[in-house]
Image 1 (cartoon, rainbow over the protein chains, first blue to last red):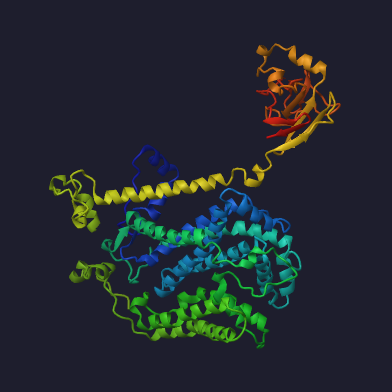
Image 2 (tube, chains in turn blue, green):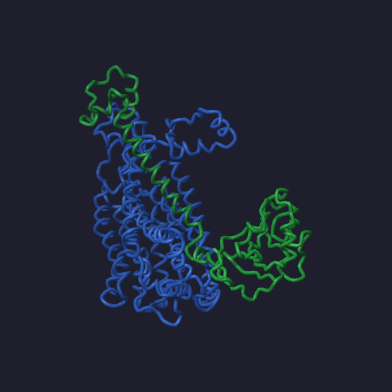
Length: 431
Length: 208
């Protein structure tokens, strides 16, 4: 792990020497996020979002533990206990708004993190495992967010639970009994609310475990960088501390300013007013949509309106899950030898003018009513989404002629690298 | 690597420029020290870490405060009691802040027993007059919470063990209270607590 020039941890005091022998935790921290972890010197602000995601995970766990001290997972009192939290508990409003908006910001940050990975092809060897664990984390986040949204037991909570567990009903043969089993009843009720609360408390810690694996896997090859050229020499790296602790600290400050603007001034902007109406199993709100971060996948779900061999309902569910599962295969679907989109003209065009607009369209359609023209637009966008990953990406990555890469990160930053000029340490540039 | 050189220049104090105007020449101030030995970067570093530290400390306030009693709990902080039907020698149990409270109309014999005690020899010295309200010396209002570890003492109800001193007896760890609810024997450190209360009329008391 790490590079041979990584600074060695040397305990200075009696206590750290003692710890280093018995339980080398300071050494672990030093080598993970301290001066002992050399990082490419050219990371842009897009590389802040991993740390930001970690921050929001911690924020969600801290505020969530606080909320769980006041919340009661029982259909009789759940809705009232949330109002109690908002009105009676000291700072309860702050805790709840931070948690609710924290979930949204966690997804904002994670989407930028994922699309950073897509543009710079961070999923390519030797970093496939980091990407795979990342997709698992994203799936766990979706499950956690969904179950958290059910807990206030408002109208959106109830009908969200009904609709999402209804997805499992589409599975042939076992579907209906599976849904009944998941809910512990025939419709969302006390049994479902209780188990959702239990799992909503559990899954964040599973995510935290996966994050540790994610970072562990990252520290074996080290961070990627905007050129996609691997680190060759000490002049290509800087120690994580103080250089990237400072840069991440600044990025965190900016992110918190935006976040706090929402928490204090627009706390309900990202939510739905219907969720302030207590759950009513006899009446569905006129326009139900999931939380905004599920929109693209919700649009894909609704894009299938006709039976074709399989029932439309099953197609929708399969497509929705496949839209994320396809990410698991990216390291092998992208056959190009070059990583960074900066040096892949064709790849770059299809990224900015293909994938990104289609995701934007799916985002929009997911939040729109299930009627024309949104259904047809969703269908076209869904078709392109899968076409991009399964056809366009393998083809363009095979035929494209990448731009010349810099010799090294140092050359990309300084314009020249002494070693490249002298021919020392010269390896063939990956082409 | 450029930044590394900055640290190296700390020793070269003699080379420092003597303008002392670190603000006006940021490029230079990064590389050489001003007269007072504080670099622009040190200032930024201290300011940033302080701001983060103060911010982090302020965040602790709501995180700690949220565990304090909430508004609905604090709203339960008064209890009104009608004692017009309380006969001599009778007790009633009421609830104040989710805790039992004992109100007893003492018999003349109990008052006499309480006043016969040598107050200075008590563990928690108090006279019956100090415990009760003026003009209502026969109405004993105390929390039904043993001051040892919080059990509810016996003695308020008819037929319960009143302990060796005829008042209250805590069965958990054997604390004996006398007719004025003063600790006389056992591990409890103080007398049964007297809540804040007042008579709003001859037959009504408001606790809290």
